Image 1 (cartoon, one colour):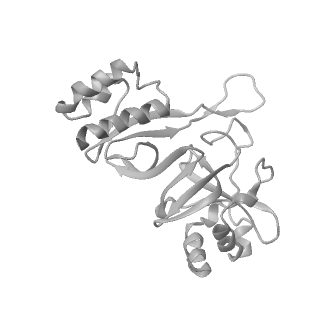
Image 2 (tube, rainbow, N blue to C red):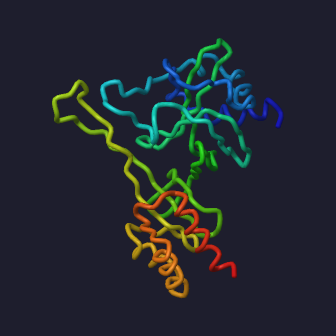
Image 3 (tube, rainbow, N blue to C red):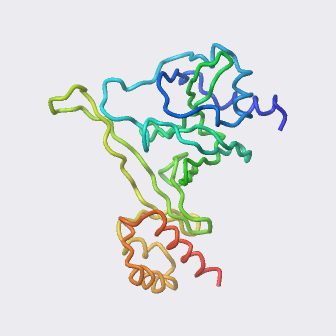
Amino acid sequence: MKKNTVFTIIAALILPYSVFSQSKISVNPEIQSSAIFDSIYGANPNLVNGIGNKVNYYRAEGHPFLYSKDYSKGSISIKNTNFSNCLLNYNVYNQCIYLMYSNQFGSTNTVELSNAWIDGFSMGENNFTIFSFDNYQNRIFEEIGDGEFKILYLWSKEYKLNTLQASSPYFFTDPLRESFVKVDGKIHKYKNNRTFIKAFDPNLQTNIKTYLRQHKINVAHASNESLRHLINYCNNLISK
């Protein structure tokens, strides 16, 4: 992809009102994609250095991100073009993705990317995609599975008043998770094994119930790895 084309894509993703400087980092920004570096280096210096409101939660305990304040090495797909070796963080409170980069002046900044053109992204071993279903429009879901059936997590956090005697008047809750299974193009919310099984065609339910019992899986508490094996098994049932 030519440099000016990459710049056009990334420039369209940058939200001018949400650019802000990152004063402390614990990861090396040099591992990011050179394509994204080049595209941002060519952007308006005023934009890159942070026009608009500075976003912070300095009066709150905790943070709005899924895992931590630290940025993770990952990749992001924009209009079917994949950019690897990026430094990303996922703000679950505001449902947005931040990219860390170094500008032409050598300072390290972060910028919020628009969800409109993003197909999906990964952070470490976890994959995320943007779906629209019924009451969930353009929401970021963690995705488990590669076939027609998928397990989806919708993550969120709450920003609450701290009623205890503390140094901060507000705090972020731990991540809250809603669990779904995607079957036949629709998503079904589940909370336990019974509601998980119910989402599938009746012809498949007995086999899935047996698999869960044999492998001693409780879908409400199972690891991502166990759930990946489970959903792959479900996909194999319809491929036979």
